[in-house]
Every structure is written in structure tokens, then in C-alpha cells.
Image 1: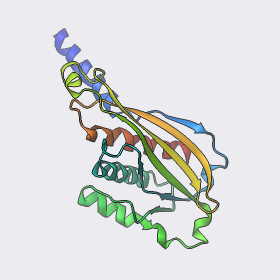
Image 2 (image 1 turned 60 degrees about the vertical axis):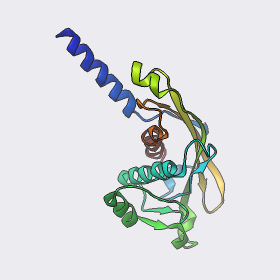
Image 3 (image 1 turned 135 degrees about the vertical axis):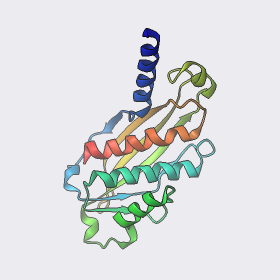
Length: 194
């Protein structure tokens, strides 16, 4: 009986660790209050690890992030650049298409209080999926890091910069293991700072 309880506790702990968003560290403090922005524009993700994380994964991170930001209900308008490709279920894409506008549709007056969010993938260390499979989520760890930059769209002035490093805890060595922790970190950053 004790052995079963120990196994259940171990799996519950691993599930909690895998579901947590990576901590976001503010590297440049806010230069103006982010609460003043009622509109958010999401720029295409910059990928500095091209060849290690493919465009499909980047698109899935952005789709999950945009969906999570919409669900926060913090912004009167969410704009998404025409160059952002989205991949997801029909239901998710329909919800996103209904809630966002293309940034080209913002008029000059609307651009005055728009914060632009730019996400940049900086580093990807694959780790060993085999070790994670054999010994658990904490063995053979991989990681991925990204910068989050908020800019005032009207002035093009950088307002805030943050960095996060997410641990890859999936049991297989896959770049898809980065989708959930990074999208959760982007949504968490948006929730805590706007």
C-alpha cells in the first residue's frame, strides 16, 4: 500500500512540475506603467535557434500564447501582425480570429496606447529524452530560453524587457516539449505585468 502511495505521489509531483510556467525575470524595469495600455499588438516571434526549433513549433507557441492572452480579458483590442502564422484546432483558431484584429487595421489614433509584445527565442538545449524516459523529468534535462520585450508602438520606445528559461520535462526528446512551458510563460508574463 505504501509503495502505491509513493508512486502516486511521485507522478503527481512530476505532473505539477511539468505543468508550471517558467519563472519570468524582469531584466529592464518598466519605464512607463503597463496598466495604461488597453491594446496589445503581438509581433511575429523572432527565432534565433533556427534549425533547432522549426517554424511549426514557433507557430504553435504563438497560437497557444495568443489564446491564453485573449482568455485573460485584459485588453480592449489585441492586434496580431499579418506575418504571424497560427496553427491549432479549428475551435481555437475561430476564437482567435473573432477576438483579434490585424495590426494593419489600427488607425493612428488607436496606435497611441498600444503596447507591442515581441518574443525572441534565444537558446535551445535539447537534453536527453532517453534519460528523462528512464529516470524521470529531472534527469537529462533540456532547456529553452526567450526574451520578452514590450515596446510603446507610438513612440517605438522599449518599455520593459524580461527573460525566461523553461526546463524541458517531457519524456521524449522533442522540440514540441517547449510549446506548453513557453506559451504558459508568455501568458503569465502578460497577466502579471499588464
